[in-house]
Length: 249
Image (cartoon, rainbow, N blue to C red; front, side):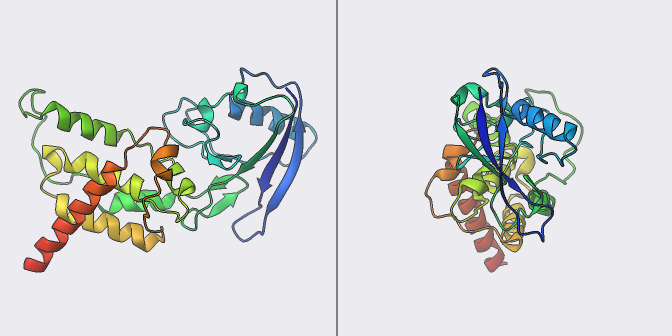
């Protein structure tokens, strides 16, 4: 396959940045998208040019690091992570536009790399269980209905890649935050801090500058782990319940 790549190049956060066009040839349809970029970078390095900077780690669809906006969609034309996107999804002669996540709370570090530290700060604000729950109980000692366990597990599959933010026209992080709140609020170990957790995490989300949710559904439609919007409804209930308790204290 021979392809034309239009890639966003930006030296640092203060640089204006812009698209630059590259040609790649002899690309196998069995390559992953990141392997295709590896080929480009090898050619650029051999020519003494600065290679394209992009995030990656496990390359197994687990970590969510490979955050690329491809032809107007987070992670590309399939609902998966970029590292699991293969070149068979494109055709010979295609022109592919590659950008970083576009959101104010995700400033560009260089080229396609963005700083997603805002997500870490939201988790630090309350996305954990800090109370002493004692020793590790037997697996069957705490009875958890299967439907609740399944919902908590599904919420916990969020990998924090930021595709939901990149897909949202408002740059909202509510799908990510709601998934993290849900996975703890649903389980017995997370009950003690559930009210405080919702208030603190949502306050930090707002402080980071993420936009509001307008229920367009783009976030869940592009999420590689298929996190459901029902988590956002649960998060709102958690927050409103916390607000009522705080007002009555």
